[in-house]
Image (cartoon, rainbow over all chains, first blue to last red; front, side, top):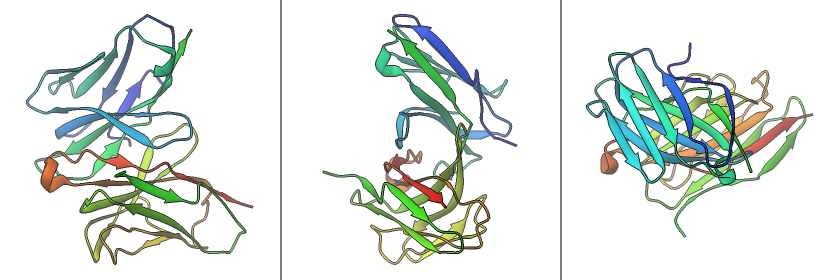
Length: 113
Length: 115
């Protein structure tokens, strides 16, 4: 089963609205990362949150982490058409911060102009 | 420019043929990874290497092979033993010793189609 599972699978919003995507995981983690993938391209790292952090901001991105619920959310504020992409969460398990990543299946975000 | 490159962008293969996908990075990263992505799905780890001349199997290594003779290069061979090789293949690199948290940098991908 997937370590990271995103919800919803697909999200369609209007430009200017906020977009919220959720990620749940099953085992303890060292950190959780969010990546973006434009259609047919490689992934781009967006933001990382460590297991001892609860919230992190980067520009229009806000990430929260609730280790008691084993879940994270990614909020994109004031969305733009250029934000249209797939968004993946990825977890690094256990104690070792440099361990391999395990990816979820992603949320496809469409921002309509 | 520093970065990670993959070639070719599109690759077509006949059933029964082996094919090698190239991945090169000039980021001086120690670790490199190969992932497979099927339509509408997430990434699954095929192989990874944390140092030159060493590599480990990921979750779906069967039918694939790799080598890591140079720090910059991590080629992936898709063998005829791979039952369903048509997919999008992504290479990534990272420097977990330097960054501590294993953020990965990705190449643009190779789309492999078996005819």
